[in-house]
Amino acid sequence: MTQAELRLCSLLLQEHFGEIVEKVGNSLLRTGPRPLRLLVGDTGLLPDQVKKALCVLLQHDLVRYEVQPRGSVEYEARSERILRILRYPRYIYTAKTLYGDPGELLVEELLLHGHLSMSCAVARVADRLTETMEDGKTMDYAEVSGTFVRLADTHFIRRCPMVPENPRNAAEPPPPAPALAIADRDMYVVPRLSLAGKGKRRRSCDEEEDGQRKAKRQKQEGGSSEPPPDDGIYWQVNLERFHQHFRDQALVSAVGSRMDQTSSEVVRTMLRMSEVTTASGASHTQPLSSNEIFRALPAGYNIGKQVLDQYLALLADDPLEFVGKSGDSGGGTYTVNLHKALASLATATLESIVEERFGSRCARIFRLLLRKKHLEQKQVEDFAMIPAKEAKDMLYRMLSENLVSLQEIPKTPDHAPSRTFYLYTVNVAAAARMLLHRCYKSAANLMERRQHETRENKRLLEKSQRVEAILASMQATGAEEEQLREVEEMLTGPERQQLENLKRNVNKIDASENQVDETIFVLESFIESTVKRP
Image (tube, rainbow, N blue to C red; front, side, top):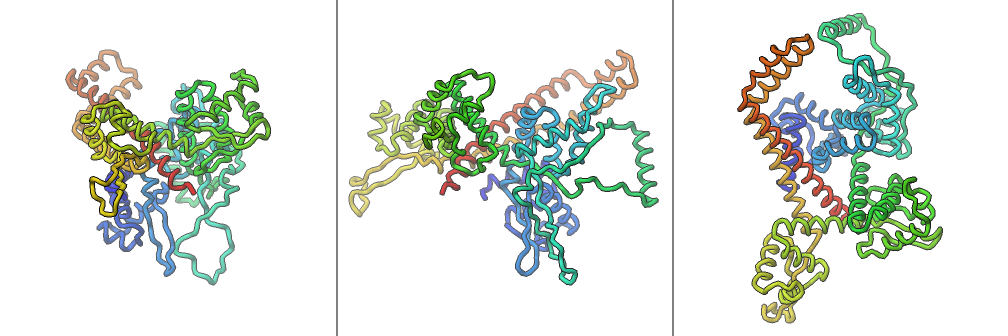
């Protein structure tokens, strides 16, 4: 694990879970799998604090545990899962786009709590949606549970592994840690619940105190509410399915910009038909016949079968090879070549970065090397039509940044420079790894900058929150306009200007974080596809 990844993981843990969890997570990231005893010694925390921190990390699936042959339990941090915290806003926004407000809040609650039961998640979301509605209106549990079922059917959420219900011999000692498992067929099965009810609004302070006193009295009397019908069945967000959706969106967008809207809609239809049946690491989608694609096209696209065949032939003949023809049955069977598409997206990202950093002439040389694979310096000058001095300078600048590499091919065993060919080439995988490392550094720098901006203006932010709270309470009690104006004037003109600047800067940093994460996603997906390729 690189220093940039370690720094970013530490910042994410600290921002979302606090210093104690960050200290435990950082220790596991640096040292690898460790038992609880060594973890307590390394962090210098109390055993109870380390246990609670591990509970939080396990709840959010950021740590895994394994029982060793001698009976001890070792904990291991999942760095790749911790880095996904950076992508949480994108998961939530995608759920909102696909399934509206209930989908957005369901995914947000599951990410916020790590995992929840269906009945608990539905109740929480219904209450939150009721809070935002007008007085007298409430959100029905049935509508939220319907969205929950749709999220499970499309695999955006899945069930957490459970302790198997195998009868254990009473004479045998219990295992030091339970072995959790779940069958593939049960992973997306939603329990049949009759969730009847409506969302509740938050009560006032007096009502809340009365409710707490009643609950306390019931507890003392020994009365306990019965567990929900889905007790023990927990759900979590399926991040791989979201990544598959992001990848499909990127592919459709690339086809649309290269060809036209209809071509992108044909590819979107192919991806949608095979989204649940295609594994996340597969190199191709399932083969689809031309007739199946024609029947699955959206109702708004009134194109004939003959026109569709022409589009499919055009896509199959394209040099990028996003779509490939795999057979002739059913009017021709076609697949989407996911690995080649990811390679094209990563290459386009590299070209864009080269152009932004070094200019259009460097980008021309970079594209030339990608197309021709290996070229001598003289050939680069001739093909790119750039003067020798400039071409040499540009090649050396890209070489020093590890964007291009130099390959030596000696004519004789002594490797004499006069009898050696020096060929420039682009190792796309190595360049992608280097840029991914830089993206991690950029994301960590942006987070630190945002924290610095907030820290520097802490007093002003607290004052602004106090003023807003006073205004809200006065408006609720029906205060006059003049009184409200007096409270608003507690913030001076320069302070308001400073607040505006702070909000603008933080918004810019947030937008930059999202853009960096989009680049990280493309590069990570490409690197994973090269590793998984058999």
